[in-house]
Image (cartoon, rainbow, N blue to C red; front, side, top):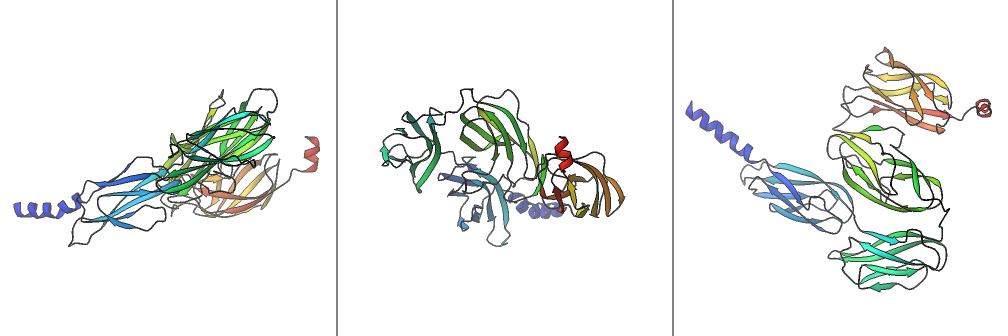
Length: 402
């Protein structure tokens, strides 16, 4: 018995030893800053580092440093061996979100033509020698501090930029300044905030590692002022927002949109499970709480889940109630049907076979016309297949009655 136990211990010991942990310092890296990654819990013989941002893998020891050149979510991996003879490799990984905290703030929030404003470079690496370009045709200005003062002589929207210099080179940080659009005298306030995904739903499922995931926020505001907010994912800041809103209006914000025409930041999809997204409004103050929306990161589509192949009728009209015939396979009573915005079931899904189901839905008069994609899924896995449905405009008779 004793020799057997000793042999078992010798077999198990290397497996137990090869359970490494990966940590990052700082835990929330930033663009252009050096981040240190440490592989602990093992004594590695060799380590190959993959930082998940498209840069080549590199060989190193238990500690490695890296500088990310763009914001986003990255999956950092350490592939290591603990012996020169076995050749067995083990991979440990860690999802990190790289932030870009550099911003340009200015005051007052709604300057007029000819009025001096103060611009401040926040979270810059440079402690002095910042070059400013005010975007109004005047010559660039260099300051020895993180602030600059300027007066725009005409009304308009100007792109102000400042050059930040770090150990990794120069980077231009910009913002827009609205001059002269002071708007109505009413105080700046927000009366409505609604969050949703691209298809109008409040919950969606994505596969692990999927990119391009963005949330949307519909805002209704009165007056003119500086809007400041933060997109939060599971209570952690994903992105900061700062935008001058002028006159009473409605606006839709996209979580991944940094600058018009610029790169898109995807919400993190590295960690499986359910995640919450919300918008924390910092300015102006809100008299209500912004709701949360959710997304589920799946390891892949549920192989036993429902598959959607088609829907009848293929066209429905806004403002009407209609019975949809859903066609597909592996339908179950617990499956979910995603209809998108301004469409809602008015009764339960009725199965009339493993490949056919019926559901009564109401298409709101406000439903957006055009093609829409319907999906089905079950809670434990991602959607499989989709069906195209076209929404026709509100009938003229109903529109006149309204």
